[in-house]
Length: 224
Image 1: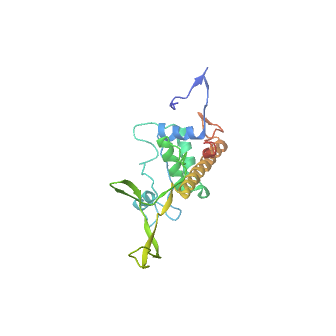
Image 2: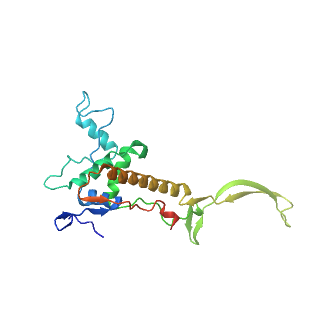
Image 3: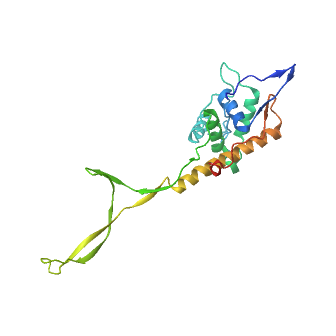
C-alpha cells in the first residue's frame, strides 16, 4: 500500500494518520524526502578556529553521510512531522550505533527496504574450489601427506613406492558467521526503530501523524 501525502480531515476535525514506525520512517524519508541533519563531531565546531565547514563536511562524508544542502529542499515543502521524525533519527544514541545507525535507518527508509537477514539461508558443506575438465566439474584436491606402500606383483619384487594422499578442502556456504552477522544487523536495526518509536511517542511533537505500536518482526527467521 502506497503512503499518501494527504492528511485526512473529517467534519473539520483533524484526524491523525496512524502509522507503524517503519511506515512513518518511509513516509518521512521516501515520500516527504526529509533530510538527516547530523551534528558535527563532538570535538569540532563548524565555527571553531582551525576547523572550517569543509572539514566538517569531509568528516561527514567519511561516515557515509550525504551532504543535504540545508534543512529544507529548494522549491518544495517538507511536512513538519517528517522533519520531527528525521530529527529524532539524527539523535540516535551511541549505545544503539549513533550516527552510523541513524544513517542506516534513514537510507533503508528512503529506499523502502528492510535489512537483509538472509531468509532461508542454510549453510551447506561445499568444496573450497572446483575444476572443470573434459569429464565435467570436479572438486579440487590438495596433497596433505604421503604414505609408503609395498608394491606386490611378479615384476615388482616387493619394492616400496611413495604415494600422495589427497584431500578435498571444504567450507560452509553461506558461512554460519555470515548469517549470524546479518541477523545481528537486523536486530540492531530493530532496536533502533524501537527507540525511535518510543522517542516520538514520548515527545508528543507530531501534529498530523500518530506512530502506533506496530513493529517489524523482532526475529523473523524464527518464523520462517
